[in-house]
Length: 168
Image (cartoon, rainbow, N blue to C red; front, side, top):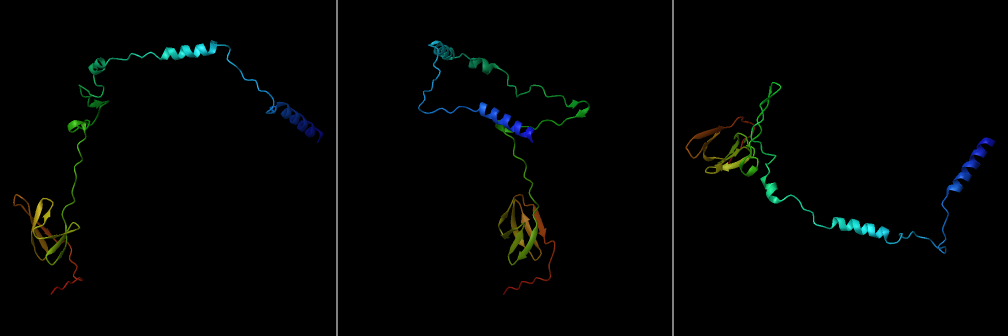
């Protein structure tokens, strides 16, 4: 027990010895003043050293350099026996060509009176549908034609006999 008291007393005295003394506001505080003009003169020299305009590379030299992004010769197609795909071709003005849009095939889903539901939209005879025109609506099919008079017939794929629509 005495050993712990002795260790506590030693640590307490060491903490008290290492604490920072408190300065009263009435006491005068000494600040370090520069040693004459030597330190300020050195700072002025450093500022003067960076003030002159720096000369860079002329624009004509930069314009004469080869573009590092353009390759004159294509890379070898084989590396270590494996064949690599060619890089994608860029469109006009350095832009990528837009991806091709794959349209869902036209599906005849319903026929009610003189209207048809094709791929989720309702149409009447004479309405344009993509590159086609709806020419005729029959009991279980729709006839479409394009500008070259090619015909496309859409049939109902599934009939539900439980639904009956009566019109007068």
